[in-house]
Image (cartoon, rainbow, N blue to C red; front, top):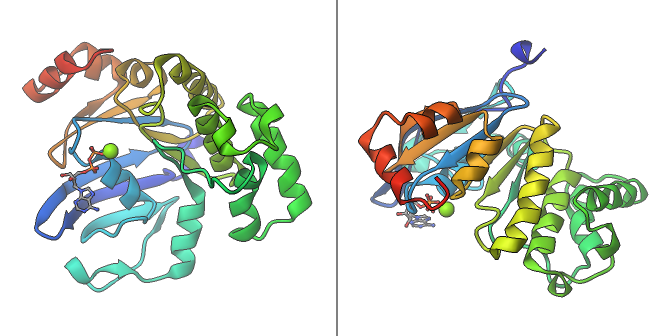
Length: 259
Ligand SMILES: Nc1ncnc2c1ncn2[C@@H]1O[C@H](COP(=O)(O)OP(=O)(O)O)[C@@H](O)[C@H]1O
Ligand SMILES: [Mg+2]
């Protein structure tokens, strides 16, 4: 079945600059349905930028982005290029849910309200139906008892699990994680890693930016090593971690703690 479905997200030859600073220099990335892609690389290599370009939180100047076989329509070119179809942008953004390093929960809303917010206001779903679903996802990530708590009353690991429940409650086609465990103490990291592993085992499509090579090796079907805005090397985790081909990847792996 997977062979017949287009990848959830495909990126071809993507270029992105901030002013004169070229951050992505022709990047390709494919996330087939049900696959986990780990994106690794040094700080500043463009990982977050690539993730934000993929769900159109950032604009890009050249290259194609294809969501489930549907190419993004652009108008203009280069620095003047923008998505042409707002409906398409909303569809893609709501279907590629992001989980950020800093959780980004609304401090003035309870955990349940945080999880319900986008499905109710953006997707216009029925409140009672979303309420039931939100509670299920909070149970799933192990914090069903925190529905009525405020974000500040939760540990970092619990807040990040709430952020994952919030992303899941959109019922997206893929989850995009940007260093989901980087802000956490090691013991809290594990509870978030467990949730991510469970989601991978369920066959969810995910792109995970991580500095945790063990997590990447454990959950990824495909690992992409980004270096200075280009894909320097990629492949199955056994190859990327077990038999790196480029000097840059060898150096990078020798400097990472969990390699
Ligand atoms: N909003 C921005 N404005 C200008 N430069 C940026 C912005 N965001 C990121 N950059 C620059 O783009 C490069 C890649 O950043 P980023 O994608 O955050 O890398 P990574 O996530 O791999 O650490 C860095 O040089 C960073 O300073
Ligand atoms: Mg980053």
